[in-house]
Image (tube, rainbow, N blue to C red; front, side, top):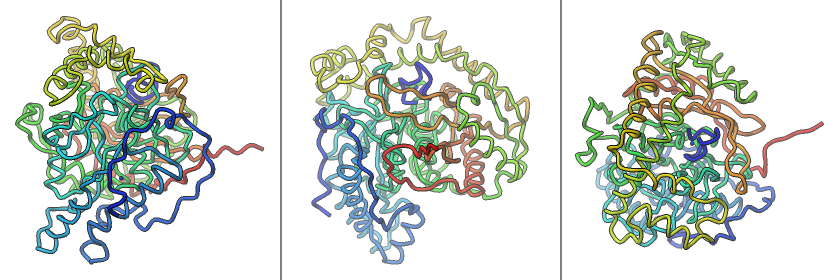
Length: 545
């Protein structure tokens, strides 16, 4: 689900003191798509700069955390509100420059907290921050009810020294509102765009995070995924995305969709940056038992697994059904990537059939409906000052504000979820058991045991499709569901382009295998160097004779 096939679209596959103020809600009229004139991106000193690059500049005195923050804020002004009007951000942090000044003072005093010290990052708008920014999941219903605490992951990033630059746009309510939704649209922010082709989807519910990182209006960003919402926007924006094992990153303080599958994760331009960000977010949280139960093994430093020769001798399975064959261009790029794996020394098991793939979409959807009702009701009941306290309240709010909240698509999924009963019902328990059995023991674990695999490999999804606010998303396929349903890790890496549109490839595998997947993804990245920055084209690079 969430990777662009039929019902899967529901999840989303399935930014100078004068600039640092809050960007308010965008009127609905402003969110309607307009023809975009050709745009020539301005030169940007920090384009494609990695975390290591930025740290070296601060260590040398060439830059400070404040000057980096000012540069990114200016970049936001150039690209997000004017120019191509990417609408990747909902608001910038009015305290960003003050935080940057504090990090600079610490550096002068000899205290550098770590590799994220002074690095400007963005958070998706469903990750709580106890500051002057909103956390609203893109909805008007939560505006004004500011959280009294940071999400655990946001607190981890603050403690690591990051400068939280702002909140990224997203598919409203993590794209779990309508079966006809358009990825990247929210009532708060309007329609986010893909910087590679402005009429194409940024994909996933973490769409603003993907657009922002790809367009170099932040260093790195945090997204969240239930099924496809990190890996799809990462693929569509030529990024590295890591959907970690359920339990690596705390869910505490994140607006929920499903406790069975939700996780936050990093989105970056390089595997090294994604690994750095993942390590900073990971950790045991006593308020989220999944981070301490079941042998959880989060790492404090995932960068130690970066190995340019990491593919040598690695056994990688290629599950061709049903993850190939839906797009000729995707297959072309994937086959080239497979050749690169072989040339880098990987041992390929091709094909390596993944049992039960495609057999648990219905039961996944059933679980998500039950989870959403239970989880969002509990979340809203505990959200101080929220004007909606239940899913039923939220449905009524949307109906009363239909012109602003539902100008393009409705809330069919909300209504379906509201009809579900408690999590003790047999229908829920049976669907959850089926999901875990087919995706884990009889699925990913089985094929990896059978062939002694280090990872499975497939194209992440199709080239990004055209934005369609009338009919909704219309992607062709993807591979996000097995790892999402299992709660297992999934890493996507840029692999190539079709008509100028990005396509990524995926490594996924057993629970807690992030170290292995990061090693493989890094070696692939270093062997291929596929990513190139966006050109903000009006449309795909279509050439006719």
